[in-house]
Length: 105
Image 1: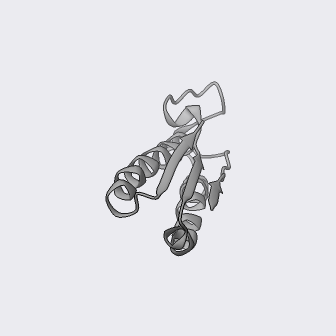
Image 2 (image 1 turned 90 degrees about the vertical axis):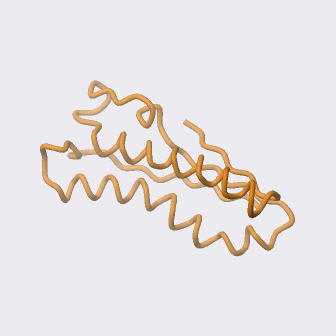
């Protein structure tokens, strides 16, 4: 069983801009990975093998305003995806060793 999480929006997400724009970007990018993982977790746990692949971005490692007008929310949200994936790797190692997790850029 494979779950491929690929959520992402950009735009208007500077810390100096409208908070709603920041929240929309961060919540879409972060929850777009978290919520499907939660929803499919029971099926993954019941399977004999499973894999979750989460899409992040190079901007989750390296914020660079020249890529977009501002990358504050986008970079923070993609860094959250990377951190979530790393935490899942550790959690699954202990609780569900038949599952694997990876992040792609």
